[in-house]
Amino acid sequence: MRIDFTEDREQIISLWSSVFGDSREDIEFFIDECKNYSCLGLFVDDTLASMLFLVDCKYSEYNGKYVYAVCTAEVYRKHGYSSSLISEAKKHMRDFLWLIPANDGLFEFYSKHGFETRLYSDGEFQNKIEFDEINEIIEYLYEGSDHEFPKGMIFSALDLPIGSTGIIR
Image 1 (cartoon, one colour):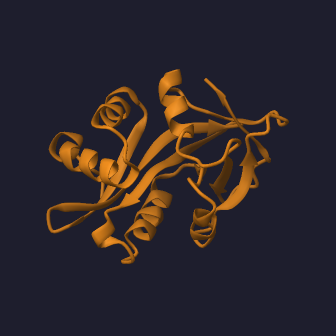
Image 2: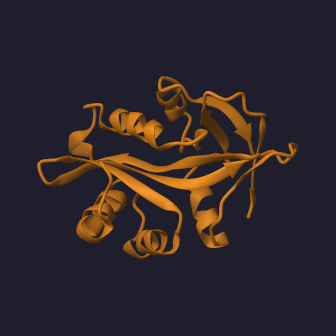
Image 3: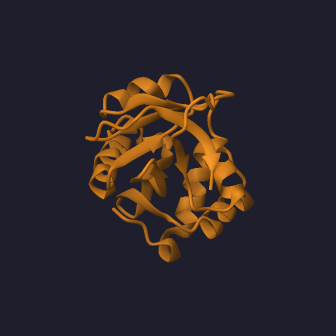
């Protein structure tokens, strides 16, 4: 399920652009400049049908993966492909998986996969998600939400403290 960025780069760009509407330039910037990530993909025959990115992050003293750019090509939706990728992502996590649903409709989807709404970007808490990435990449990771103050969801067997999604490096 891991994607080979040399072999599958064009399919990644095509799928991402078709689902999110981002420009080729923006997608290539993310792929080329983000340094601590992997990508999982599900192929039908030789076509990339669904994918997600896992970006390394920290929360308190714990190591995790930020689930980003979860998408499925329109023709392959309603087959459980994103669900399969979420299950696979759980095998690649250390202490937790974290994500910010792009819209309210996705909270129920991720709740069905064991994610809890636990992190908020109100800035009142000490604990923060940390990325070892350049500021432009960190900003990119937060841009996909419809919310001014995005709500995070976390999947973990640990009892992690409630905290903030405030950006720190």
